[in-house]
Image (cartoon, rainbow, N blue to C red; front, side, top):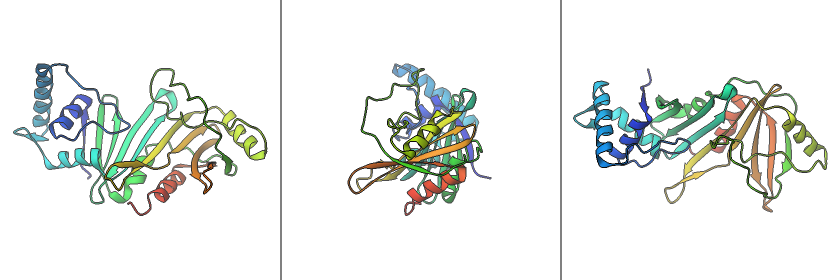
Length: 258
């Protein structure tokens, strides 16, 4: 059985500092607990006692599996993030990472981060399968030119993450392709989200690839991808998609990295 465990946000904060791995990576927001050295020490002691009781730490030292999971979580050369607004106000925040030998899937569940070991070859499937099994919508794919930049979208009403912030309907109805996209955007959204793959750049720092946005309607799921032409024009494709189609697109992006 794959090794799995959960950590409170406070424990993640303390352990990333303890292991000198830095801050939690996107898309997670882990608060810094305690404002004084004394408060931090109290939180640290409580976290260490809990981990010792669970057999994950001994004498102030993490066991090997937990340390490897945290290191892969923060420093994996290949990673995929998911952020989404689902039905019934549920949100999805997850990250899968691999170094080619070991892979970990991390998802947020309330005030906990749940870590689960997965196979490097299953990196894409493990995170895509967190989505509901919504069937692909009907119809064909539609490709339109990305409009010129306009005023940034306002943040989500509650101040939280807006996973659909970079996706918008076309502003012109000139032509059947634009009208087809406008009809897609007229449908009420039951869920919206985005996957983003990260790879290691030449300087060793993470570089994000083109995000894959998706949205669910009563007619099924659509996703949108973008590509830049040689003349610099960016084109956006909207297409019916289920989990398998999204996974296929991510595999295509990460070819040569996995």
